[in-house]
Length: 168
Image (cartoon, helix red, strand yellow):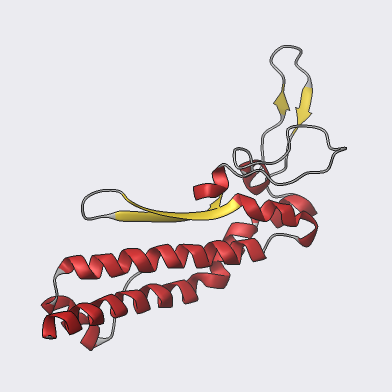
């Protein structure tokens, strides 16, 4: 996301300490990732709504002057989450540790001991696999403009607050 345009905002950035702008950007980025995660959850097929708990977001400082944010399957608290499941289901089930099986697919898998076939989840084939692989891209596409506006608004709010404080 890039902040451009608005001459007043650019002028404020020049006159106010860079820490205030960075703080506003970090808050805005965290809020934007939560918004994108919400949009991604909206893309989950209704028959698999329990998988929504496996989509989350995270924002963290990476270095002194940098930070990173991420949204998607098994991100943040969603990594530890386990959806409710029926009592008659077999197998390991979906959790934050293996949701990527549905989102990106798997190769043909076999057990090491008996060479037993465990099958594969197709990467872009039929109905179900294609639905899951579109959760993240479709959610991002649906929310990217709103997320950019949210980041811009948070930076503006932080700068205006700092300017008002300096002006007093």
